[in-house]
Image (cartoon, rainbow, N blue to C red):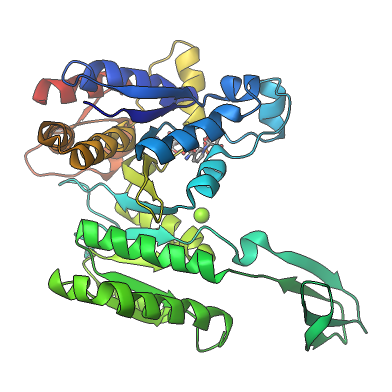
Length: 396
Ligand code: NAP
Ligand code: MG
């Protein structure tokens, strides 16, 4: 390797897996060059969270990062780790700095049948991670009150006023927003990702009901597609389809997968859990943050697997699935290889993925996959966290 990968270490059980993956599956084969940032909660606290910002800045510089799952502190964690304060979600901080979109894709193996048996190809989901109800203002209203939508100029002079509702009884009201710039960046990230991964793009919103707000999403996507991407998509034999969100849901259910499903913020929040569950296990869901200017941060979609970590600390054996974390590494290595013209590195990443899939398909897996796996003529073996990595190394 010539250019480093930004390495963001993390917390709990995934931090244990992180070290093992490097020692067992990567360092013996790759002259690994990383710029290391310890995003484990104790070090975030020690550095007043500066380490998170520095790691995101480094990602801007080098273009490729691999991230371990990290604790997002809540009140209980502040107590447990004796924190100076309740630090923000590192993923949120990194996403804000890179202005990125998160793409999640299931890792498919023979023997694990999705709950929707027709989904034979991965459904990759893109969630717009800005605005709507996630940055909203809400209020409870009393009988007799009126709520208005008021827009002012920069000096506070009222420009427009619409009655939202005159309340005869008690009720609720909400104000949400989004930005043309954010939706446009989202659209470009999605179209770029689709071209790179050879996927058609399906997008849905509720423009028939929300004739201004959701319609703006539709218009921005259509404009950017027509102007900047249509020719490239047609050349690649791909397409972009916008239709109502209800229609997209119905079409996805009947499909065999193999598309990029672009979701507004709330739809993506809900649908990503449905899609992940339908494909089997959280341990088999990969995730990548892509910025509009082509910076990549790879990670597992799951968290730090706290319950397993406390078993591990007690000296008990754990059977934690490392596949999604391995995919974070292979994603980053393959992308580094691609950007640097380092063919061998990209090939190594693909070999590691194949060895991992082969291990499971031959019946060697962690406990979470056992109830999902059925394959004729294959005997199932439950391995502990480390044995699974060693079984992959054998095949690698
Ligand atoms: P989690 O770590 O994803 O684990 C939830 C449960 O899902 C586990 O207890 C386990 O079930 C199962 N599971 C998840 N990943 C697995 C794997 N690789 N192998 C086997 N089983 C797996 O979610 P959480 O417990 O809600 O959150 C724990 C911490 O992670 C929190 O502090 C949260 O802030 C953080 N988090 C971080 C990220 C991120 O960095 N991207 C994302 C989500 C959560 P069983 O216990 O039944 O075996
Ligand atoms: Mg959700």
